[in-house]
Image (cartoon, rainbow, N blue to C red):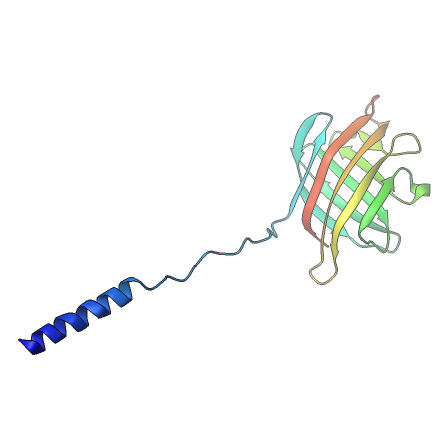
Length: 157
């Protein structure tokens, strides 16, 4: 009887000890998304694009290709983080927008904008930032084009 009582007491202590152990937290830390994205509002219509970037001797080019528009933003090479004015070729940074039907707009001395490069990572070859600009028609249109709320993230170069 004494031996059985000892077994029961030992079992109760063991169950109590195992049941009261704190479980380790298995929460996953918040991750920073590395999925590429590129979007802008084109003449009042939200539009998504496929983004790419290309370093060059004179310009670092960030391109967004959508179903109706292609945006090209040119900033002087070498690229870096910071805010750049988008105006004309002679200014250093500029932007253009083209459609498949041949319409073309470009920033100039009076129709300007800006781009802010928030991430320029040469280790992982990604660039991220925001932009907005007004562009004057060069062909296929008689009115300016407003490009607002533009953003791109984790675009590869």
